[in-house]
Amino acid sequence: MHQTRSQSETAAPIPASLAGKPGQRFSDSRRVEHPEAGSGGRNPRATELADALREIAGCGDGATEKDLSVLGFSIGEILAHLPEAKMILAETFIREIAPTGDRMQQIIEKAMASAAHIMPRTAGLDEASEEKAAIEWRRYCQARAAFKLDPWWSQSERVLAMLNAFLRRLPLLEREANRVIYAIAAEQKATVHRGEHI
Image (cartoon, rainbow, N blue to C red):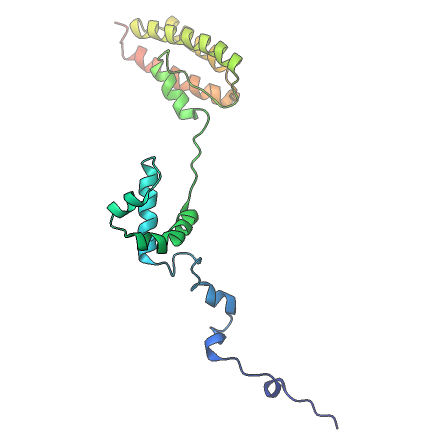
């Protein structure tokens, strides 16, 4: 009769150092010890060097050996830990992109301030459209200045009409434009009700 040998008899036993935890892959258990693995096995001096590089870069200049030596790093430490410090910086790098136009709250704030030299801008506004919008913005600011001098209902309506003409020049949704108009209308209504026209 043909006998088969069991797998335990033929296979060599796995060394305990390679076995790891039950259900864990060998590559996962070794990954933590790898120099590129997160912040688990980072050299503290490399982390300090990365922080120093980040701080110097935040000042707008590139870090030189002299800058780092002033912060207490020897040339040997810089050479030894710079690759790891660069890796830490690359892992924690966050790029901040400034928006190309004003957000809704900023548009409302600029409309409240109504300064002719601070016009709200939105993304997607070409140069020709911006020039036309600037004309409408100046008209709105003039109407708003007149309202502030003499706040009465007819002036308030004129301001809202000028604001509406300006907002229609911007690439805004109707509900966004209406939100700005309602905010200015509410502020002007409160001004008239307070009796500031007396």
